Amino acid sequence: MKTAASNTETGSFDQVEKKLVQIMDAINSIRPIFFKNELKFSKKAKEEKLFLYKKLFPERVLGINKIQSDYNKILDDTNLSKLEKVDLDFILDLEKIGFKKSQYVNEMNVLAQKEENLNDAFFNFFIGESIYFNFLSSELRNIQYKLDGIRRLNP
Image (cartoon, rainbow, N blue to C red; front, side, top):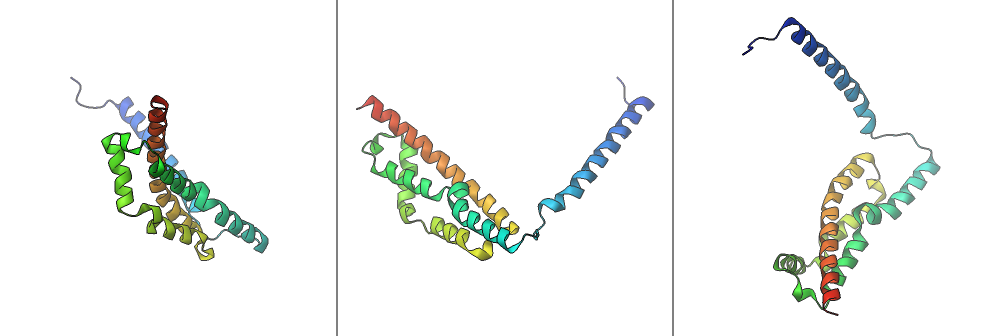
């Protein structure tokens, strides 16, 4: 069994390490550009960005209205009690915490509408928060799909 690296292997590892360091340096030099807070826009461009942010962000990124609509459809479905226990428990737990009038959802919607929150740092925060909304939306879609299947089997 070989226990020591040959000169050729050591040279190869040194070259790989050198290239890796160069790549990491290049990545690290680019990174500040992505997190820069103050991009210079004209007043008109800032107004357009604000308009798009207010109109698109709550619905397109967070999907707030769609989530509320899906949840209400599931609650109103006559086959709700026929769901598997885990799905039924999830919906009933959402109902117990008052999700229909969710304070969290309302506060996120209000925060998304505030002009002072139109900055890259806050936008990055919202992207992180959107993960919760994506998971919830996905779960509600899965449950809705199951209810549709139950409805097809029991017309």
